Structures are given as C-alpha cells and as structure tokens.
Length: 364
Image (tube, rainbow, N blue to C red; front, side, top):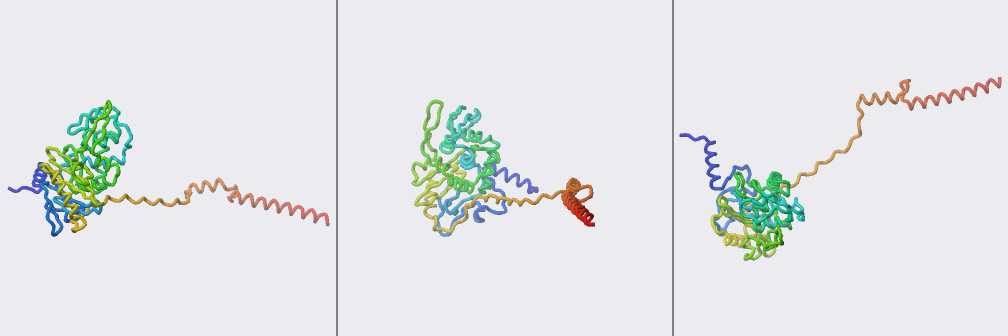
C-alpha cells in the first residue's frame, strides 16, 4: 500500500504533538547551521555536559556565543518558562504603579497561583513579582487584562518573539498553560532570557527571593520558586516550569567574575536542579576557551525612519490659473496692475500735452 507524502506529514505531526515536539523545516537556521540538528552540538575536544533533557542550550550572555547545545531548535511545550516572554513584553508597556482589579476569571485560573482576589489592591509591580517569583497563572492573566486583554497581549507577545528572532515560539496563553499550537525551544528561551536581563526591572523580579504581597487585610510573604537562588553561587534567576504534558523546563542565568552564563532546558522527566547547576558550571569552565557552536542573535533592528519629502511649491491647475487670470485682468485683456500703470502714464502724458498746448497758444 502506498501512503502519500501528505498522509506521512500528518502522521509525523501527530506523533510530534504527542511527544511534545514539532520541528518545522526551515530554510535558514537562526544562530548558525550547526544548531540545525537534533543531537548534541559540541566544540571540539571537550567533554559533553550531562543532561537528561530532550533539549538544552548553554550560552555566554555577554558575547551571545552558544557554547554547547542539544536539539536547540526542537519545539516543545514551554510550560511556565513562557512567563519570561510575558514579562519581557509587558514590563515596557505597563505603569508599575498602576492599581489593577483582576477579573473573577483571572482569579479562578487553573494551575499555580498567587491567590488573587477581585479587588483593586494590586499594583502592576506586585503582579510581576507574582508572575516571576511564584509562577502565578492568575497574575499572568491579570497583567494581560491590564494590557487590554488576552487578544492584545498574545499579539504583543508573538510580535516581541518575532522582534528578538525567537521564531520557534508561539504564545497561546500568557501563563504557559498548555494549549494546542503553543511552543518554544531551548534556543528561544535563551534569547528571551538574554533580552530580559537587559531590563533592570526584569532582573530585579527574577532575583528577588522573598517579598510581601498584598492581601485584603495586610499582606503575606511569597518566595521565589527558583531553588538555585538559594544555593547556587551567583544565580540571577529567570524561570522554571512544569506541566504533565510539557514535563520540566527551565531557563536561568548566573553571574561570576563579571561574566553571565545562560542555561535553558526543555522536556526533562525528573528533578533537574542539580543538573542545571552542572550545566552552568560547564558553561563557566568553558566560556572564552572553546570555539562557539552558534550565536544568540540580536533583535531585528527597528526600521529606518522614512525620509520626509521636501514640500514643493503649490501648482495651480490650468483651470484655476485661467480663473485667476480672468479675476485679475482688466477689460482690455491686460493684467489689472499693468492696465492701471499704463492708464496713469497716459493720463500724465495728456496733462503735460495740455499744458504745453496752452503755453504755445499764449505765445502765438
């Protein structure tokens, strides 16, 4: 029995969705051609870092060099690591002092939550802490509402992903809760983290260990879910995530001796914190010593301003010119000014002629 290529494609896509990965064909691999494969991508002469994740990226945040990778552009469900894109998108757009009254829908969102109530007691600043520290799905939806709603926010998030060239990423929710068609990659998570680290407020949220969070009466304390903030030297933070379909995912950064290393992993089946620490150690040990296997690309530059044309002198249409001419002409067909000048000249000449004739008649 012959099976058409379309049927094979549908079967492959169905299998990919079941396993959580979709790797589309691409004409050009973002970050370098060595990052196109699904296997390990390593510099020559170095021992591979240990990881059970389906995909990972280790990169130098300062230079953008990708030091090692595994299936970097494999597309997986991102879980709550997608909240890093939510923050990257909305921090520049929202007034951090603005008070927000979450909807009942936002307060009732499923999954991890900070415990919002539908009262106007939360600043945008509080909601960003809840988003990035305790992975509040309710905070993600409340922030989307503050930005004009889910439709607007998802459009903004996907536009931001395109701007930074995170082309494997498709946002269907601001929280990272699993939705059909939602995806990201280890490479894209590294791009998102690198872009976020350039924003002071983003760095502040992800590195905060504990904070006071508003309640209808007073406040309560929240703690950051990133376990490495408490025990890994130089840990800056970013975001971890987990759902039953996505499994474990993480993107984070640490800084030592003036250098920052980013690690992203996706689809990890077990406890990954010690493994992530080992990937960071590998990055610090090898940065600046090995030939990079790729690059974290820069965002797309903004379009150059369109030069404004110099204004041209107004041209009077032929019909308008004729009308203007008629309105300014005398009955003789000559322009009115010329007619007046000529008339004045003739009148003066006649006066002088008259005076001359009178004088002549007197002499005779």
